[in-house]
Amino acid sequence: MKKFIQTPRHYLKRPLHKDYYYWLKNFLKKNKIKSFVDIGCASGYLSYYMPKNIEILGIDISEILLKKARKINKNRNKSFAKIDLLNTTEKNFFKLAKKNNLYNYPLVTLFGTLNIFNDIEKTIKRLSQLKPKKIIISSRLNSNGFNLTIKYKKYLEKKTITTNVPSTDKIIKIFSKHNYKVKLIKYNVKTNIKKDKKDSLRNYHIFLKNGQKILTNGLGILSTEYLIVASKK
Image 1 (cartoon, helix red, strand yellow):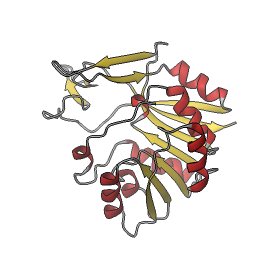
Image 2 (cartoon, rainbow, N blue to C red):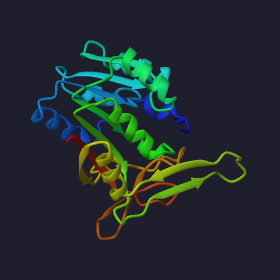
Image 3 (cartoon, rainbow, N blue to C red):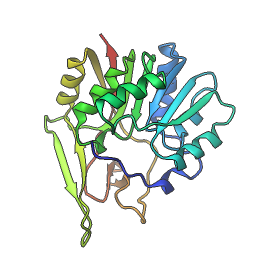
Image 4 (cartoon, helix red, strand yellow):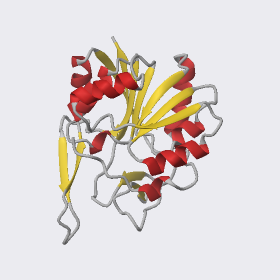
């Protein structure tokens, strides 16, 4: 898997409340979930906005972001660890999972990072190998049956970056292969997101004359966001 290179400045500001946090809190309450693992937790904003009685283990590959996460979540029943779980060999994956007691949680989450992995199927397989009862992923998906691989680079730059947008059909098939049934929830980001002049690749809204708003980015991709809710069969 290709290693994700984060841009820390986006995660070191004051805690940002995302729209789906409301949904997640209701989901935890409805399913009586008292603990879960948040993979790719970044600065721990999700943990910050979850109820204090929910025990969360946030893992990430950036010590800079984890330091921020620990600071804002002090005395909140949350813990954080630097673990490169999805960019390692299968042998080391099992070793890390056992060492850090990551097996058999009620829930594992992966918010906003699925698209950056070159091998979507391998990433989902790894999540399922942790044997959680439920898995929740937020991601851009294509509902027309197309699996998109988009490669891009800035003018005069040598480095090429890849982003993947899997189809809804592919997601359902992969999870079914690993004995999970899937519910796909399409959601619109209600909070108005302004364009980041320093990083045009970040998502932002454009507004049409009829009042409709569309989520896009500097690549011109019109994003359809989904919450993928997978439950063990």
